[in-house]
Structure formats: C-alpha cells, structure tokens
Length: 636
Image (cartoon, rainbow, N blue to C red; front, top):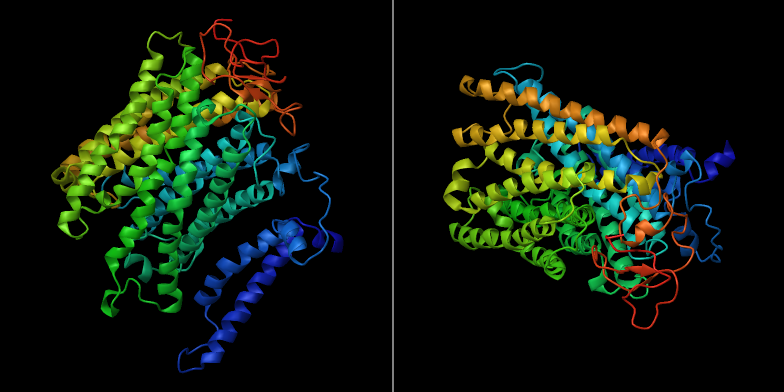
C-alpha cells in the first residue's frame, strides 16, 4: 500500500485530496483567527472551508495522479530523467485512466468524457421538458428548475462542445500534418484531466447547501454575487475548464506552426487544421476574459471586494461586457472546428476538390477578427448606452458574410459531385440545413427592434439550439462517424448510423422549430411555469424532445457494439487523400514509420495522378504522380 501511495495514481490522489480538505480547514481557521472576533464571529466557516477546498483539492488531485511529476522533478534541480515512453500509448484499457502523453489516447479520453457530460446534460434537459409538459408545478420547484437549466447549459458548453472538438482535433491533427505527436505532450495530458474535475464540480453543485448555481451559464451579477455557495462551484469549475482550453489551444498553435511535415505549407493544410488554428487563436485571446469575470465574482463573494456592487462604486453592467467579450467568440470556438469537419467530409464524400479553398481559409481568419466586434449584441436590452447598439448591429450583420462564403463553397463543392450518402455525409448535409436556419435567425436578431421584441423569450432558445445542436452537434456526430474507423480500427453499423441521423434530424426540428413561435408570442425562457395558452405547443415539444433523447441511445449502442466487435476496417475506407488515412487503423503509437513529404493539395479528388503526400523523398517537381505516392486520385 505504501508503494501505491508513493507512485502516481488514484491512491496517491485520494490521500492528497484528503490532505487538501485538511489544508483548507487549517488555512481558513488561521486567517480568520488572525483577524479576531471583531471581523468574524466564528473561526471556522463551512462556506469558507468549501471555497478553499474547491481550489486546493483539485490541484492536489492533479499532483496525485502524476500531472506535475516531471516538472517538479526538473524544478528542484534533479538530473533529467531519460524518457522511456512508458506513459505513452494505450496497450490495455487501464492506460486510458492515467496520465498518458499519446495524443491519440488523449483524443479518445477527451471525446468519451465529453459524451458522458452530453448524456448528463441531456438528462437534465429531459427533466426540464417533463416539468414544462404542462403548466403549473409538476416535478421540481422554481429554484431547482433554475439549477437544471443552469447546469445543463454549462455542461454542454464548457464540458461537451468545446472539449469534444479538442478531442477530435487531438487525435486527428498531428496525423493530418505528419507530426509524431503534439508539441507539448505532458501539457496535453494535464489539460485533459482538468475537464472531468470541472464537470464533476458543476454536477456536484446540486449537493451544495442551497442547491446548484441557478443564474444560467451567464452568471449575471448581482444574482451570482448574492447566490448560495453552489455559485462558487460554477466559478471555480469555469477556471479549470478555461485553463484546459488555453493549454490545448497553445498546444495546437505550436504544433501546427512548427511540426508540419516537409512540404506541408499553410496552403496545403487540410481545412480542419485551418479551423483548429483559427479556433486556437480565439481561445488564447478570449478565454482569459471569462476567467477574469469569474475571478471578479469569486473576489466579491469570498473576499468582500465590490467589483459589481453598485452601492459601493462597483459596475454591474461591466460584468456583462467582460463576459460577452469571451462568450460571443466562444460561439465561434464551438463552430469553427465543425466547419473544418464538414469540409473534410463533403470533399471526400462528393469526390471533388473544395470549392474556393483559399477563401475558405481566409474566411476562418475573418471570423476570428470580426468575432471580437459583436459582443454587445447580447446586451441590447441591458441598459447600456443606446448608441452602442448601432455599430454592434452592423458588425453582427457583417460577420454573416464569411460564414456565408463557407455555405456557398460547400454547396458549390456538392454541385455535380459523386455523392456518397452514408452516415457522415448525412450529418454534414443535416448541418448545412439546420445551421443555415440558425444563421438566418441570427441575422434577424442583429436587427435592434426585432431583438428587443424577442429578447429573453423562447426565440432565443430556438436560435441557440439551431446553432449549437443543429450546427455543432451535427458536425460532431459526423466527425465521430467519419473518423471512427481510424480511432478504433473497426467499422460502425451503417444502418444504425442512418437511423440515428434521421431520428435526430426529424425530432430536433420538431423540438426546436416550434420554440420560434412561442418566442414570437412572448413566452419567456428560464421560467418553470407559463400561461395555459402555450400548453399545446409545449406538450408537443416535450414529446419530441424525449424522442430526440432516445435517438442518442441508437448512437451509443452503435458506438459501443461496433468498438467491441464491429468489422475490422481497412486503413482508408473512405479513400481519403489526407495523411491520417495513409497509416494503419488505429495508427501506430508514434504515427509514422517514416516522415511523410507533402507534394500536393489535400483535396485533389478527380484530378488524374494527384498525390497529397509520399513516404519517400519528394522528387524534383513534386506535385505530380509518384511511385512513392500514398494517395491516389478520386477517379481510381
């Protein structure tokens, strides 16, 4: 037992977590005692101990599982240990439950963990729709309902959509650019373990005195500064989730810039790599702002600061400016990787080069820039200076242009292509439909009079779900099906995949399309009760939402059974040209036996003799067909 406690792992982590609670208790007692009874009536406070524990216990957990071992060893000046790669790669299922530096293992850890939080968030949504099936109180009281929608939104944004894209990117991008791994493997490993801690902390808020945080994922002040201790769970969890995002984004940027294979210029990068590059820029620039907003709330709540206390000179409205300066770029953080996934799927499944490849890449960068100019369109009814509405409305309309470029490029790529309507392609086409509808309602919300009319109604709920479910989740499902053979070495059940798509697509629209009508009629969101005139539509929405939830079970069954016993996949079942399809499925531990050389574009489908990469030195005049080519044209 002593050896297990000394070695990195869950035994050591458990001991250190207990010591974390002891440390939090001692520190709280020491600080409160040093100020005397004049300041504090009691030297021990449950809320104070819990606040410190929420910071100390996770940090000691990371130390316990070995997240800092290498860095601590170096920091104290001991000789560098030779790397034996014992913590790299997965040889048994247990390797997925420890610190692992293999980007492919980390990608699967991210993806599976994110889907767990999708299921939890979906169950919370089912509880909400059960409550809303009829007017009046059914199952939960008003405060519990507020906690349900707050935790639901926070889990799906911070613990599903953002990290699942990081997971897919972690697995695929080093392979796509011909790299053996990510630039900082140990940082990559640590960044994953921050996520389950953040998610469990949000779920754990339900068990806090006073219940879960109940002011939405936006945590507007003064609600959040005056809320029970459950609010602190959210503020701290966002810090861990945000730190994970920043670590991953820095890793992507350095990997893409410095570790591309010979010949892989920026304009030979697959569009998924471009999308993750642009997303990582957004994350690095924007995420510190939400971290700052939650630190301000923590300081107000725990230390008596007054950043948002208007009675003592604070600025309540400033919180919204800081929060949305992150959270509108966050919408694109949750969309741009999906754009890259759809680009990969459409090019391969239509057997055509991407139409307007360079404009697609430039439009991604345009979204990065414009994304920081539109934050206050979320605040048209907040009481801010009215003149700010005009420039924000203009920039909100303008940012639709680079997104429109992508829509038309995808449609042009599909035009006269040889379409393969399998499951990944169906989800890509479903995305084009539902995301375009969400984008249209977004342009409507840029119009100030209309925005004021539907603000805080179910029209907003419909819009955000058409963007994030109809947009992001459709691309996530498509990406999982597309790279499932590469990740697992097995094929999924195509019949079940199509059943999953059609049930998802139909019941998604039956669930969220009627919410536009409810919003236009004035039904407020984030309220557990409503007038009886809205009862019929709400009942229909609730029935459709339960069917939508059941459709996810088809996906889970397909993934689990196919991973365990699906047909063995060939290395390149889709005949893709990008580099990840030119190695075994699943890939070798270090990706490539020989460093590939890139000699052409990634999407030259239908071009006779086209080659993207070779495993032999590039010939003079690279770009034509070569005996060493690993990719052939779509016509083969």
